[in-house]
Image 1 (cartoon, rainbow, N blue to C red):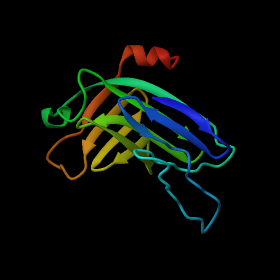
Image 2 (image 1 turned 180 degrees about the vertical axis):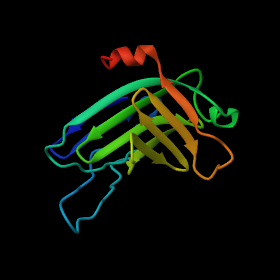
Image 3 (image 1 turned 30 degrees about the vertical axis):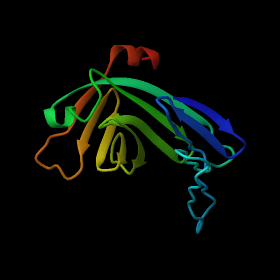
Length: 155
């Protein structure tokens, strides 16, 4: 995945594998402001950011264990996750059911919780949990950062 700044108000992400997703236009301008997503091209999403937003990209890999039903939804043998943080915007990008899913950060009592479609990715320290919302009879997967990922992050 490539990231590049686009002008003063945006950033562009290119998801390698033929899909281009652009994040960079989530306008947050005080009370009463509206959110706008403007397609810039086919397979592109633009989210305006505050001009001073600095983009942080963290890529890591996990090995997951648990329910076979949930394991079948993720890539094997490792799950690659890219975390993107820019001001008030926090995203986690990973493959689910063979498609790139962009998970958005939501309120969490502890750790960082993200949701996309009907799935939830919740990370805390070196551990993350993957679940399908509404599948109450299935326990979340437990995913551990790989040693290689931990060493890249300076742990």
